[in-house]
Length: 261
Image 1 (cartoon, rainbow, N blue to C red):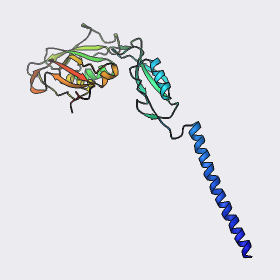
Image 2 (image 1 turned 30 degrees about the vertical axis):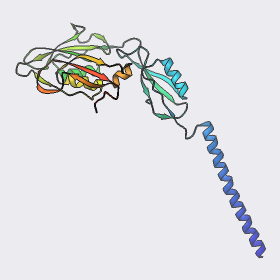
Image 3 (image 1 turned 90 degrees about the vertical axis):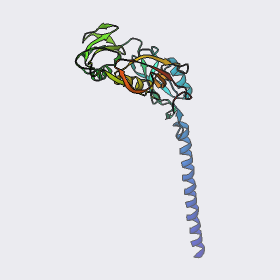
Image 4 (image 1 turned 135 degrees about the vertical axis):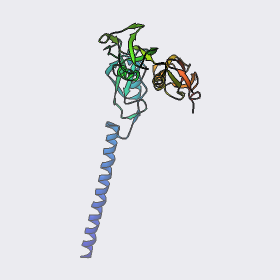
C-alpha cells in the first residue's frame, strides 16, 4: 500500500515537473518567434529628415529600417523646394522596425492666400491675423496719427494691397501704423537666448523693426535657422525710451559655445 502511494506521488511530481518544463519551453519559443517576426522589444531611432530632399529622406529611412510617406505640403519661403519641412514621429523618437514616418514637404509652387483687411486693427491684432493666414509681419512704418499702432495701410512689396487680393503664402506684409506724439516711445527688449521666431515676435511686439538677421557659419540649412538662438543683439537691451519703429539687428547661432547660458 505504501509502495503504491509513493509511486503515485512520484507520478504526480514527474508530471508537474514535466508541465512546468513544457510551459517554460513554450514561453521561450513564443518569445523567440515574436522577436523574429515582430521585432518584439527592439526599437529603432528615427533619423532627422527635416531639410533634406524626399530622395535623401527615403535613403535615410531605409538605412534606419523605417519607411516614409509624404502626406502633406506647405510653402515656406527660403526653404528648398521639395525639402522635408516636418516629420512625425520627430527625429530621435524610438519606433519599431518598418514604422511609417509621415512627412510634410515644402511645396514646389507657393500656395495662394487671400489678403485680409487689416485697416483699423491694432498692430498686434493685425499681426495675429496675418499669422492665421500664413503671412508674415514685415516692416512697421510709422506716420503721425491720433492713435498709436493703429493700422492705416497695408503694403506688399512697397505698394498698397487691397483686401481680397491673392498673395503668396509666407509673404511679408508691411503695415503703415499711426504714431501719436504723446505715445511714441518703447524700449529695447532682451532677446538674447531666444530662438529665432520668438525673438522676432518679441521685437515686433515692442513696436520695433528687424533691421538684419545675421546667421553665423554654424547655421547651414533651414532647419538650423529655425533652431538658431540669438547670441547678440544691436542695440543692446535697454529700458531707456526708444522711438517706435527703430531697427534691431539680431545675431544667431546653433553653436552651443556661443549660446548664452
